[in-house]
Amino acid sequence: MRILHTADWHIGQTLNGWSREYEHQVFCDALRDVIVTEGVDALLIAGDVFDGINPSGEAQRLLYAAIAGFLRANPRLQIVITAGNHDPAQRLEAPEAVLNELGVHVLGTLRRDSADVDLQRHLIPLRDRTGTLRAHVLAVPFLRQADLPGLQFGATGGAESAVTAAVRALHLAMSGAAETQAGGLPIIAMGHLTCSGGLESEGAERRILIGGEHAVPPDIFPPALSYVALGHLHRPQSLDGGRVRYSGSPFPMSAAEIGYDHGVTLLDLDDGFAPRHIPLPRPVQMHRLPATGVAPLAEVASALNALDLHSETPRNAQPFIYLSLIADRPITQMAAEAEALIEALPVRLAGLTIARSEAESTRETPPPNLADTSPEDLFLMAFNQSHGVNPDAAHLAAFRDALSEI
Image 1: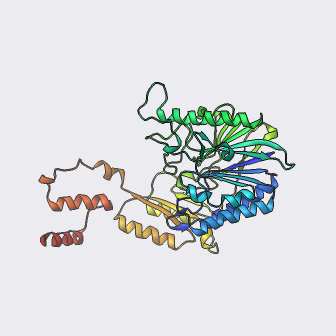
Image 2 (image 1 turned 45 degrees about the vertical axis):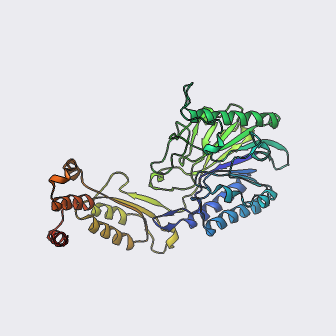
Image 3 (image 1 turned 60 degrees about the horizontal axis):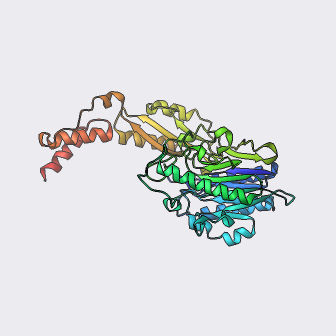
């Protein structure tokens, strides 16, 4: 039996106002091909299906069209979707009555039967292509404070924090109950959180745990769990000897992810649950110029013109470009020049940063005492901080005119 672990699709994401619908469609087509060629029996999506809590109609249509395509390609495919911190948990669950009839299980919130987690809902049996029961999925969505009734902030009495202790206790109770019901069959857990030791993407993933914490150790998942399919970190990576794994996002969601080997993870129950990374083609190229640090606009322009670009590329398939420039003239002027450079080429601007030179930064002095500083000196400092250069005579004249009217 084969299980495909995916996460962090972020359908509906935009970059600098640019839609990424085309990329998501290419990804879904590629995923359908993997399902067919690898003989996948079950598909897991471990959170952040959508990029925000108010997904557009187009984003929702794309998800359900993709699910329909997967089921047409493999009518016996079982699909389990859990909500992440980006997802609208209840909206994700809204069509579950229909989806369940199709073998699609959607878990947006953690539900309880009295005091215990409702395993009738969260423990999902998986069958192979012959209909034989082979494993169970313990589907756990993104956890919120209300999901941890034993959480007591400020509690002491152990080496770990109250949050870690509460998350550990929840998983221990769930896996223990699941083990009782599983009849000796393997249990695969799904979750959406950060495990300590995982490599994060700078600025890409929110630190999402409760009480000011953002990570729990991977050993919160008891040994009874054969594999833990996680979402939230966008870099594909394994922890705890491969038993705990992030499949990663399907393609770069930001400049921080340009160098990642994006893809999905395949599990074969007959091969001891050893995870196999399957790389996916990148739907649209993404470049940061320069690759690291900052550079003058002229140098970046040369690098941009050296890219393999094609004027006939459709707009929604044109490369994304992040520019990181060093200020050598007024920032507003540089920004206009950079945008004009981008507009002349078959590329899309995903981000633009303009940094002041190191020499300018080292000349900065501590904030002055306002009582001892003239309005014009304050204007000079503010202008320099905003634009990287001092104001010219025209700017000073305009400021003095405005000051005289006060």
